[in-house]
Image (cartoon, rainbow, N blue to C red; front, side, top):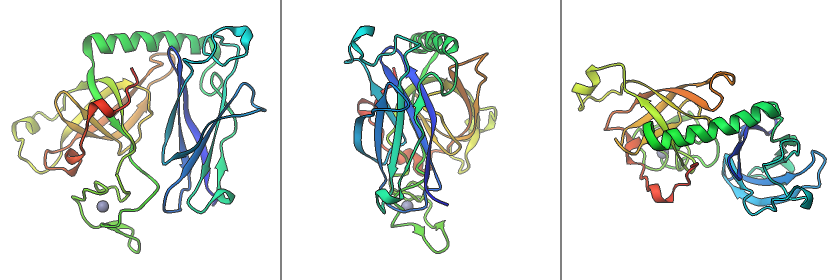
Amino acid sequence: MALGIKFTQLIPLPPHRVYFQWDLINPTEVGSYLFQIERSGSSAGPWEMLNASLPNSYNYIDDLSHQPQLPVDGGVNLYGLNKQIYYRVTVIPPSGCQNGAQTPPQGLYTVNIPPVQAGLRRRLLFDEFRILRAYTGADLVLFKKRRWGERCPLCYDPITRAVVRENCMTCYGTSFVGGYWTPVRTRGRVYPPKNIDSKTAPQQKTDSGMSRIQLLDIPLLQDDDLIADLDSNDRFIVEKQQQTELRRKPVHQEVTCSLLANSRVEYKILIDPRTIPSLF
Ligand SMILES: [Zn+2]
């Protein structure tokens, strides 16, 4: 099967930004992948190149704050719900363009939700940002696990396809160099683990208890992604992601995670909050 690419999220980040993320389908090649990001006012183009060679990435934030604001001047902005913005992403695998793939053009307000709900979503997202920042939110750093790219030279066995070292500092047990993509900073609510015993035995080797974390739905998390709580320095692995229904809670996702034991290699990933882009 050939390489493919599809959008998994395309969402306005009020007031001036657009967030999107994609997944590769069947990324069997080993090495570095390049992405081209394009934007247009129409699904038929012409396309404006926003980034011609973005290496190894799963998401993009388009900052429209420098775009002209008036509807008559033809600039792209987020204020007119009836004016569409389209994006498309092209992937170039290590073997070159001839084996690349491209998403179909995706309109900002057609991808998930009709315009009225898009307006509602924008309002709710704004409120949610405010509430999390002011009252209840924990400061979280989200790491999407690498699922393609450069294999770890130290511990990946290409014949058995097994990871042979558990505490590898090159791939953190994921078998891909770096382990995780560039992290994103956000806020969320962390509900304590149900297994109370784990709290009384901090030296235990096994992971302790399941926690529930509610957070904004950007970026969309998947199983095995990593969440770090900057306040407590707890690190969690996502076990189950649930998109909450649009009508009830349009801006949330809820994940069930296991709290990792202190001995785990995931705690060795250095986090410098000042260098991590924030969604707020
Ligand atoms: Zn490794």
